[in-house]
Image (cartoon, rainbow, N blue to C red):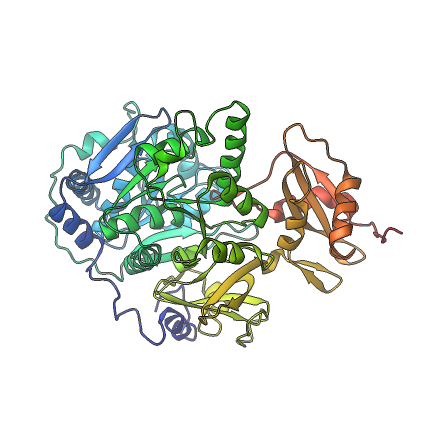
Length: 586
């Protein structure tokens, strides 16, 4: 029994990993492992393009399935020469790049686990994750070498990761202190002759939650988790081998990895990998590469809308200079999740660009997506589920998992339609466990479902399908005098105000009610906003108890790597009002 899970909790985890009583060992995918999948693709469609990459200078590179597989095999042989074994953890300190993707698949071919690092995190957090993951090798882009050495070998407080026995340099000029990835890989065979002992139960990804309090929790995903979620995503989205997806999200996160790397490979399709999101190149690359589906987060929808507005002011196409609607005839829709999607933003984007948003929901702990809006909804029905219930629906469960709403107290009582509680998931895409966190595993799997920590509810359509909604993180609910409010409700009202680019409802400490409601507002460029006008607008549309009492203006918002706003990090900006009792205006 792993030290991550105690003997009482393991049966609860197994229960949460079953799909309507069907255990994960009863497979839903036809492959023995990721190695089997990639080898099949390279054999069946060797000349087909799998991966297209655009770097920060707009330089394009492409690899066929055969060429990609050959490079993966060379890297796998290099890993073996470094004495990386099945079950070892390999860290990456990198960004979206062909090299990064190759290293991932090479690890999976030999049964190693990838522990990708988010370079936007601080040094202490990365050092903690490197230690906790027990990574033996770190592949580091040349730009981060000096920082990586400080993190791994540093003697400052909370730095150091002695378990990392080797740093491998990726890209850049040759450095005397590190083996250079490209030089060594080229020396190795393009075939992989070691025994294929890897199974679908082998661990493949170790990703860490981006919580704002306490140490990050390591989410352990298996090769089966990744493939079965790709199966569920592709089946629901109607993604087939003749289609092309695009990745603009960081691949150190499950969204970029599962949706736009594993899913296209699972169906035998192609993917366009971007170094990063660029509003100027977004629609241009969709047009030129004949992309059918792209996965985004709400902040990127906001950036796209702003870019479209700027283009319109110049008299240019909102899609970019030289791109019109006819150039996008092949494009189907956008997948959107991993952050709070406001109704106002969804309506603005769909009206401006004319493409539907397939809103969805999932977590690292459920591999990636667990539900989406159905793709067969007519436009009117789609709009109703996006706008009519106070929140955009996150849709219905995909085929590989179930979803339900439970009493948020954790008593295991399942709730009915319309009742707010905790969103819980059960199925084959539920993680193996949190690594070395028996306490977190015990609470998370308390009654045989994965407890998300998100509040939500569901409504049924005339076919009996359950359409789910997320109303906020339970820990981010504003508890004012014992009455809890969802920040999402308040934020929809804030976004109705002309000139408000971003409006966040913040729970701040208050001596009279425990917590009070504040508004953090980022104005649109050139907008003139007054606190009094914002407060009065909220008083007209919300009860006084639910309305913000203070407005703080700013131009910066802490976000995770996937664009989730971190409301808890804004609480300190309201500290001066802790001792204030706010009274209803007459």
